[in-house]
Each structure stands twice: as structure tokens, then as C-alpha cells.
Length: 341
Image 1 (cartoon, one colour):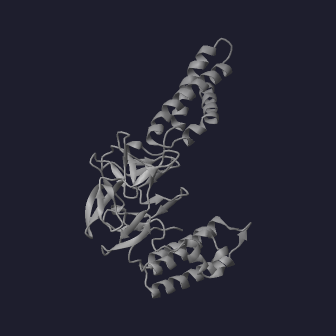
Image 2 (image 1 turned 120 degrees about the vertical axis):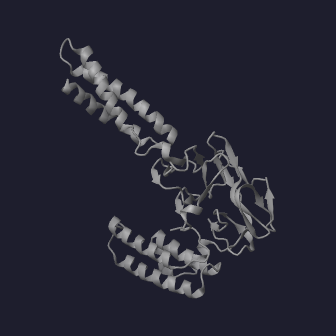
Image 3 (image 1 turned 180 degrees about the vertical axis):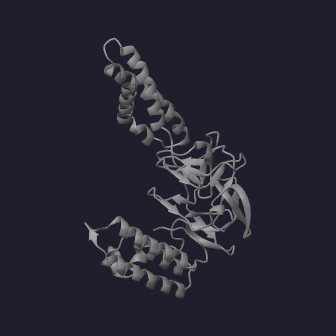
């Protein structure tokens, strides 16, 4: 009998690993375990019957089904409990809220189906890359009227009933004063809040895309005119997801040291962010100069490291990223924006 159970377990382990990898949402995590149990039982029954001695095929099938079902159930088990999820992002980066109580939520699923501890503190860019912001986690989202947690970066989301809520914001400005609380609307070219009118559209694939805004309110509550893309955290601080000054990243890089043209993307992007900070006055000129000098030192270290096939080893890449993180924390940004490196 032990031999039958072992054989069933080996068969299930060999044929069901994709079930665990297929977990991309709380709903699918629930169904994966049921599918894993059924699939494991079926595979185990076949193997158990095949390895059983003459006259024992029925017993072997039953024992194999039990063993395979147990193994399949465990293989398809999610690493995190969906009853503790704030929600999850789908493949398009759209947020799906849950009805989990505040005291129970401790993580979420990203768009690839990986469990992430804590509430989301960032956004997905146009290329689907996750950008972490430097704002406090406590201001990265809010609870809607149904008690569901919503990222401040979400211009629309699916509520706990699966209904789409479009054009939502974590709050809005009225005459330069921040009014906290979920709101639907957009700003006109003069910075006046137009309540109830969602600013966005569905693209050809049916995915909600927020419109670029005609300006934004800075940390002093002053309206700055000019096309901008971003969102406000729950305290009304603008989180830019593109350059609000009108300068393109290509222009900013062109104005930088030519050697950065061959640098890794994280170093080039940090150079852009520092220059952008000086340009939009979230950094003083002296802060920018110190930051660029520190970045140049990081670049020199990176150039002196071994590059195999044009890339750093994982260990060296982690070392460089750690220095970039330390530089970011030391910059003293006056209006915290997103990390784009």
C-alpha cells in the first residue's frame, strides 16, 4: 500500500506543478486547490491501478486516488491565504478590491500572481513595470464606501461585487485646499474640480486609461499648468508618473554626461530623475549637484565591475542598486515623487 501511495504522489508531483504556478488571483487560488485535488486523485488512481498486483487493481486505484488527491491538493495550495488579501491586480494592471476586513488584510497579489506583503505602494507604468513610490505606505491608498482598500494610484478599479468604478481619486483640491475622501471627477485647465465627470476612456482592448491632466497641484496647493500624468496620495501630494515640466526624458539624458548613454537603465533613470528634480524645483541646484556627483561615483564603480556578456552578475547588480537606494533616500526631495529606476 505504501508503494501505491508513493507512486501516486510521484505521478501527481510530475504532472501537476503547473497548477501551483497558475495562481494569479484570489479567485483562481481557491479553484486551483479543487482542481489539484481532482486531478491528483485521477492521476493517482491510474498509477495505483497500474502498479497494483494481479487481482488488486481496484484497491490500488482507490489507494492511489487518495494519495494522489492529497498530493495534488498540497501542490496547488497557494503560498498566501486570500482571506488576508487587500485585493489583486489583473493582467492589465487593474485593481480588484476584496471584502477582507482591515484587521485581516496583510498583502496582495501583483499582476503576475505573486503574493506581496503589505498594501500596494506604487503603480504600474505603461510597460507594465511596477514603480514603487517613496511616499509613506499609510498614504498609498484608502477605503471606499464598501470598506474595500483601493490604491491611490488607481484611476479606476473593480469593487468587491465585481463592478467597475471609473475616474476615482483619493481626494480632490478645492481652491487650493485638499479635501480627503474618495471622489470621482477631474480638473479643468484652471485647476477647478469637475465633480462626477470621470477623466479617462477604454482602449481597444477594453482597458481603462486615465487621460493626461491639464496641470497639477504642488505641495503648497498651487496649480501648475501644463500636461501632466500622475495621481495624488491620500494627503494630496502629487505623485508624478511622467515628467510634469514638459521636458522629455530623452532631452534630459541628452543634457547629461554622454557616458550615461551606455549605463544600465537604473543609473540612467536616476540621472534623469535628479535633473528633473532640479528642473521642477523638487530639488535645489546644490542638492542636484551633490546627487549627480554621487551618481557619477556609482557609475565609475559600475564600469569597473566585471560585465559578462554586457551585464553585471546578480551580486554586483544588487550592490549597485543598494547604492542607488541609499542615494535616493539621502536626496531630500521636497515633493516626493516615484522611483523610476
